Length: 196
Length: 177
Image 1: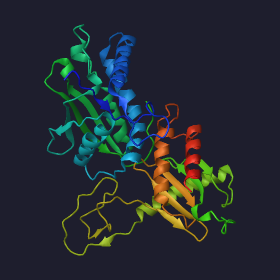
Image 2: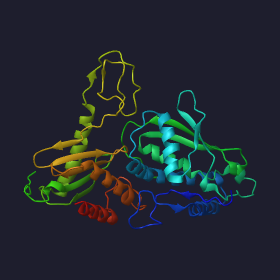
Image 3: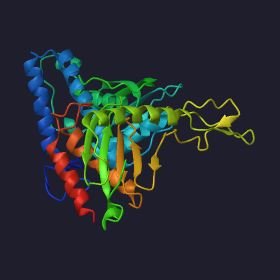
Image 4: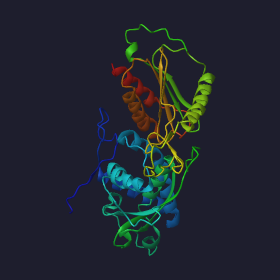
């Protein structure tokens, strides 16, 4: 297990600036370390106010998602999903696969098909991470909260208002890492949203 | 619009100009690649973008519905279409959301409109004989996703002033021949 080296299929110009292939690769550990640094810096900046850190991560993700969706659409060439179940599969099997090279499991649907969970067996953002030992981080910080924001931003751009939050995280000692995603509404008008 | 390059040897490959319209109908990008169309003033381009945005919305809402032949199984209406499946009419292809105007052709030029799922519209003016316009538009969308959307200092929905986008767009179109 220790020798495992995930190479994220993150599209990036870091590796080959010229003549880039459709999907360039970047070392997963660089992403893990960069993200870890951001979270740690936020914890420092906000004096370990973890609610605020969660909020900031979500905002950052939202702004990423709004931009990333165009890359996803332009390069995957997929069309519009017919319903929210299809959207969930698209997010899990195509979106996460392309950008993080993981494919979370879609499960725990509500009967109205408006809420589901993503179970992450593998979370490259959290490799090597141990939450601070201050008695609060374990209960308050959602380390990978940026992913909730990314999803929210990306889906908002394709006319879906959603709410996403983590309900468990192996970093906190839970058995699984689970994100809960709920469809709030389909956005009918095409007014541009504001960046946060 | 008048065209003077009808007999230009490269006209069969000509891409005259590109316009990008944001989801609110605002002009965010306009560039001419090859002479051939009459030049418009900046203000006229803004008006053209706004007008096209409106016309596009109208064409989307007047997409004709066909009477249902029999009591076929009702298709779940997808977002964006909201076709009332209870009535005896349906879009020709109920699984696909209505798209509105896709192209407009005259003997002088062809206007292709590509609307992304996020609502941005790419308008490409080409010679009517230009082939594989779809490929060109898809490539432009990819370049836009890369050099505009991923530029952290580009503000969403605002006019595109990204030098790298201009450069890559120009180079790719030139290298296409």
